[in-house]
Image 1: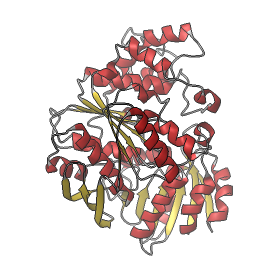
Image 2 (image 1 turned 135 degrees about the horizontal axis):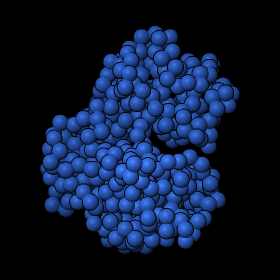
Image 3 (image 1 turned 180 degrees about the vertical axis):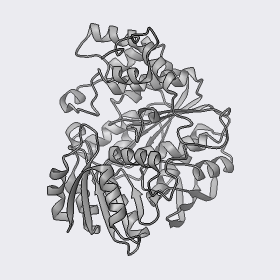
Image 4 (image 1 turned 45 degrees about the vertical axis):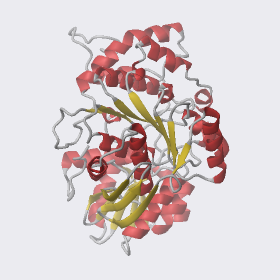
Length: 473
């Protein structure tokens, strides 16, 4: 591919498109999982890469967030609150909803106060420049060990660290990619560890034993830090307690050490009160749907307090949560018919989505627009969502791991009375918008990749969209 392995034909520096193409020459487990190889990974290679870059991850304080579900929302809330402070802050999440650049974000006090779509994403030129800087190091590592060169995710993580260092970020919020103990993000010496709900997912890599999964995700716990966790099952909670005891750090648990109460939950979001580690925060408004977001907010507030032992102004928490946006997570994007987008891809997330839909949609007839990755449990999703829907239209994203819609339809049929197949997701969405009654609801779900593609298409076409999609950061 022209320009992938260096400058382009005109002698110019690497373009963003060339940088992305170059990264795709490395092993990408997001596109093609290799369970055996993934289970054999260690942090040694990631540490070597960071050392070659001058250990940029040591230039900022960090919060590391792990768990099966909710970790992205926790990160988004914490980052949004940190944006209300004079600090220079960064955010690293995965996978991306729409654009690779939305994984790496940075915010400084110099930014305008008015938020807009993508205002904090890494700039394409900055991304390309960093990849070009990394290239000689990556090629040397690849030459020394062709079968053990850094992976796509490791390179992106190192790139984020380097970007944060160059932007003089003071606090970075980092989402664990998969597991925890051996995840590339776990090379940081974080000040705070946050563990969202831990359940069974990625069975082929992490196994199906909750105890083993807890040990992997709890592997981010280190000495000299604060650890916060969502309420867990008895076996998971005990393992986290033992891990914290071993490292000599306390384990702070939602519902016991910090609490949240919900005053209102409607289509506009949540109104809650949080009793944190050091303060009471009343009348907090969160423009996200789902009662589970109150717990995510509680963990985010607790993490923020742990970063600042002297206390947090109420306005930082209030304004930060009021402005949080986490695209594709129980997101309302259209009014008549009501359209909700949620990237729920495992049974635990589907159960939370079901509870939210049952509570907020009342008697509305629900039509699913669903696409899933080939390694996910259709039956687990169908059990929770198929049974509350009057129809399901099976489609697929453009992601390499997308399940064929016909396969999805066959497996979903036992759970829903009316199942259809439309392979083109945008066509399926447009069809449903015109086919269902204005009083009905369309729920786009099963895959964040599907949701991201449709959000991007909606923002570019504005076709029959009555809500502004993606206009907050």
